[in-house]
Structures are given as C-alpha cells and as structure tokens.
Image (cartoon, rainbow, N blue to C red; front, side):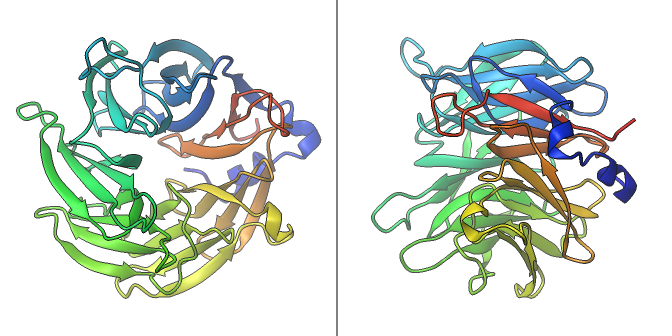
Length: 362
C-alpha cells in the first residue's frame, strides 16, 4: 500500500520532476486511465488524435512503453465510422474487457484485452445522450454509464445500465432518470448500491443519488444537495467502508459527505496556498489503503494529496512543465500513480502529450 513515508518520497521539487518517468504519447491526447489487474503489467488509456478520433492505447508498465494502439469504431453503423471524443475508461473485475466512453459520438467501445480488438459498440438508444463517467458493477455483470443532460434545463440526463453478461451481452437493462445531469457512478463494496453524482443545473448546484442496484430504484436523491458546488465530472470516490464520499467541487475543495446521513463531514482545501483562479480539480481518487485522497490540479499542472484522517493537504506533486492533468489511476497495490497529461502544443500551455509515472523513490 502507499504508506505515508512512501508518498512523501515520491514528491520531488519541480526542478527534479523532469527526471521522473514520463511516457510520451505522440499523436494522441491521453485522457482516462485504468490499470490492469495485478500481474498483467498493462495500463489502458483512452486517447484522442488531433482530429478527435478515439484511440485505445496499451502501455506496458514494466518498461513504460506503448505496445498497442487501436482506432475505435462504431461497429453498429454501416461502414464502421470512427468514434470521437474518448474520455473515460473502465474495466471488468476479471480484467478481460475494457470499456471506452466516446463522448462526442455518444457511444461506448468494448475491447477484448486478450487480443486488443474491439468486439462491440454500445450506442443509441442503449447509450446517450452524452456519456461521461462509466463503471462496471462489482459483480462484473453490468455497465453503468452516466450521461450528461443538455441545455437549456440540463434536467434530462440518465444513467444507462447495460448487461455485459455473455448470455445477454449488450442488452439494455435500465434507464435511470436522475432529474439532473449525471456524470459519475461509484458502487459500494458489496455492489448493492450505486451512487450517482449530478452536476449543476439552473435550479441546483449538484447532488448525489443513491440507487438500489437490484431494481434500479432511487432510494435517495438529495445526498449533499446543500453542500455541493457544481461538482466536476468524474470527481467522486467512495471509501472502502462505504461511509464517506469524496467529491471535487468547482471551488477546488473536496467535499466530504457522510453517506448514512447525507450531511457534510468536512471540506478539504487541496490548494490552500494558491489563488482561486488556479484552483481547478480534475479526477479525484482514493489511495487503495484509503489513507489519502488525490486530486489532479488542471490549472496548476500538479497533483495534490490530502490525508483522509486530518482532512488537510499533505503533498503537492509538481508535474513536468506544460502538463495539464485531469485523469489518474493507482496501481492495484497503491505503489504507483499514473497521471494523464492532457496537453496541446497549440495551446497557451504548450508541452507534449504524456503520462507521468509517480513511484516511490529508490
């Protein structure tokens, strides 16, 4: 696990971060990341070419090299046009299937990682209107995809539940209307309850739905309703004991919610020394041992870490110059953190597209 001493060891001064392991990803912008099960030595990446063509990328984590790339296509359409706008990525518990959300083309690509081939596309009416966060249920039988709502009311978003069991693979199971604009799903450890994060609408600033997995009924639709300030997409994590949700808010703090009561437990200010304009949070992750919560600082080009015990920032990890991080992934044992640096050479930020590998110092 990522112990406190190990975490401190990986935090390098900005001048030394250039010596950290950086995996260049020329030709595509890396976004969502997921690490294969222990023993596979694979990091799976949702990427986009400069033309916004969705690409599935495999990186060998032993040598930190790209071993495979795959252009994603809509297998349901005549001529199989390419998919666009890859954002998030998820894998089943067995590590045999990976699911890539293509937000622009509004579908989900399904990849068999044994052969690195695309075997299916989940598209409308199974998926839509605008897929964002996606997650496989702990039993490996269902894919839950949170789909953003659109203007003007932003109140028609849904969670699409799709079967990924072999006998009824790709069959729509449920369409859960949250009444807002859902963008992320997490499950409790038993897989009996799902929590759906909803972004802001003209009438609210965000809330979390609690959904019973067995029958897809919404049990509660107001968790954190008076405490969330426009939660950013894909910025929610749940503790192993199922008692706490950590949600990245637009004001760049992490809102800590007590699940049983739905009340505010604390606010963790991830960038306490930075001006408000620089405080932008991307993905939020809990370390596998749940001792730390990490957030990507998109404007600062850094990753910040806070203690879940003290609710205070403990580390500030500066990334290579030009980095614009959003997505992250821990290795299964928590010893390594992978950070997806979404950069564009033509932007004011500059830099090269890459993935930073943060590991304990020797």
